[in-house]
Length: 155
Image (cartoon, rainbow, N blue to C red; front, side, top):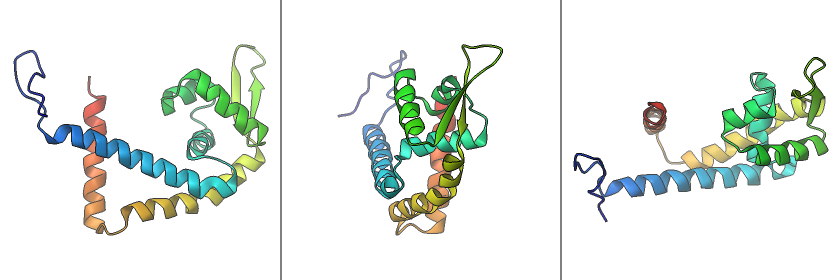
C-alpha cells in the first residue's frame, strides 16, 4: 500500500518501497545481532554486552547514564546489563568520592583482555552477512547507511 497522506502539503513523500526499506533494515539488524550473539556465546557475552564493554574501553562513557545515551538503552535495561557484566567479573562500579550519586564504570582486567579475543568472532559474523558483495557494493552500502544515519540526525 502506498501512503500518500504524508506531509501537511499533501505531498506523497513515501513510495511503495519505503516500508520495504524499513523492514529490510530492521531484519538486517536483527540478523546481525543474532549472528553476533551466536558467535559470542563461547565467550559468555552477548552482542549488546560487547557494545557496553567496547564503549567502556574507549573511556568516553564512564557512567550508566552516558552509556544509555550512547547506546540508546533505557536505564532499567542498562542497569540489568551492567549487573550481569559485573557478575561475570568484566565490569566494576566505583562510587565517586566527592559526589556519592555518581558511579563510574570501569573494565576489569578480564573485561579488557576479552575485547581483542571477541573482535575476530564479530568479523566472522559480519563477513557471512556481506558474503557475495563486491568491495564496491560494500563501500556503497556503507555510504548509503551513513547517509540514512545523517538524515535521521538532522533536526
